[in-house]
Amino acid sequence: MSFSFAFCSPNDAEEVARLLEDCNLPSEDVRDHLEHFLIARSGEDVAGVVGLELAGSSALLRSLAVTRSYRGQGIARQLYERILAYAHSKGVNTLYLLTLSASDFFVRRGFKRGKREDVPKHIGATREFSALCPVTAELFFKDLRREARYFPKDVLRLTPDVPGAMLWAVALDQTMLTYFEVEPNSRFERHFHSGEQITMVLEGELYFELDERLIRVGAGEVIAIPSEVPHAVLSRSVAVRAVDAWSPVPEQYRTAVAEQT
Ligand SMILES: CC(C)(COP(=O)(O)OP(=O)(O)OC[C@H]1O[C@@H](n2cnc3c(N)ncnc32)[C@H](O)[C@@H]1OP(=O)(O)O)[C@@H](O)C(=O)NCCC(=O)NCCS
Image (cartoon, rainbow, N blue to C red; front, side):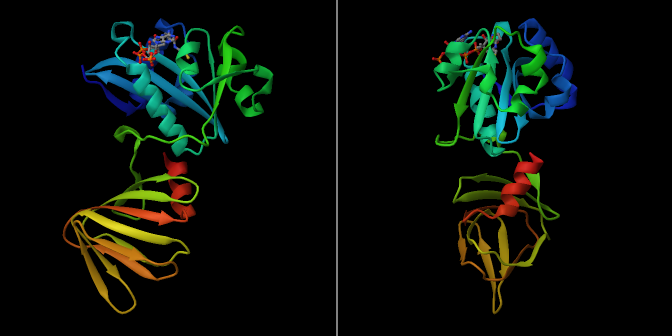
């Protein structure tokens, strides 16, 4: 059976709350955090859900629940992979969670038992932590900084850049990859950056205006721009898909993507 995964919209609130109630998990505050929830569906049916509450460089993983009739088919595993990728994309260093019923699931994924009194204060202050979860629930945590990051397609959420362009970005400390979808007749005004940029056009064509020449980069072609070299970039009559490698990471993209997703 195939399942689809997507970020929740406000329209999903009732179904999400119903599933959580059915699993005896807190649902009262779901609407406040729904933008950081993922939902799995089989056709129209809700098959599962998981959420994140962001608190600085930490986050609370919560509300992992799978509809009874869909259990045992790997949905929790796939939801977990996606919420982990989302946590990475938001710059989360440490994940915390409370559970009564799924300790083994998280231990197998590298979580360690911790003490409630040791959590950062903004995690301790969440309603889920301070009021909604039973005091008997165990605390687990995981340091995300040194682990490889896998980004399934459905968590690579496009966000607006210059007019006509959308992007997603994936970054480590020293390196970033961006993916752009650019409408016809869009323009990135002349600029330069201290980092290096290598762009590959996947589809369509991009034009790079440099001091002494205009370079057309077609599908399957690459342009490499050293640091401090001024350039403008534009599309003409066709839409473009392209990827860029960056080093070091251009902070404007890291920040923009972290704020918008
Ligand atoms: C726990 C739960 C989310 C698992 O959902 P699922 O889709 O059936 O799980 P999957 O099919 O993806 O199985 C993933 C793994 O978890 C294991 N697993 C399934 N249910 C488990 C449970 N209750 N406790 C520990 N491990 C469990 C599976 O054996 C499998 O192991 P593997 O990774 O070694 O192969 C589901 O049983 C549920 O919704 N329970 C009620 C709500 C709940 O307790 N949520 C956790 C609160 S934080």
